[in-house]
Amino acid sequence: MIRVCIVGAAGRMGTEAVRTVLAADDMELALAVDTAGGEASGVQIAASFPRPLHGCDVMVELTHADSATEHAVLAAESGVSPVIGASGLDASQQKRVKDACKAAGIGGILVPNFAIGAVLMMRFAAEAAKWLPNAEVIEMHHDKKADAPSGTGIRTAELIAEARSEPNPDPTKVVKHEGARGASVEGVRVHSVRLPGLVAHQSVMFGGEGEVLTVRHDSMNRGSFMEGMKLAVRGVRSLDGFVVGLDALMF
Image (cartoon, rainbow, N blue to C red):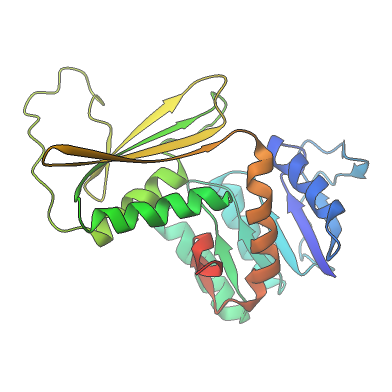
């Protein structure tokens, strides 16, 4: 049995994660943590993160970048492999977790998107970028999401930038309203949409001479993220150090 700690257990993703771990034959919910405290799926939730973190094999972190970094470092120092589902960790925060995992000799993973289809979408986008280097990303999320661009949008842009040749120069000379062309991530334009009714969606558009290719993924509910979360929990301890992306366990 894999003993799992879920941090952010009272949130929308956390509640779904608690139910998923409880239903899994090979997992045991050892600890649920959330500053809100309370209860989820009949499980009591601790209001504070224990230091050190004992009695767990894997920690699933579903809060925000700053707290996720601190919790992941503390987990690694306790010999617990971190699975980070929180988005927005910058390069310095990722390095802190990577260094902590290396020092402890354990695996860890940052997962920009747990949905299997989203991982495939990013992989397809990277392949398409080799042939159609002119690309833009449109990521769309619910109106409660605090960060922009999303972790998936940023990761997709990074993969496109790594794979493509030099794109055509941006012809825009006059920006009449700031942000009209979106954010530039590694030279790839990323546009963020936040609206009620959305969950998590992303389109990547590639343009070529006389043609447009669109690669799109849609998560209709948070259950779409659970197969990937289980894959991360089951596989993280086999990793050699800290990695970014669920594809490290898929391909």
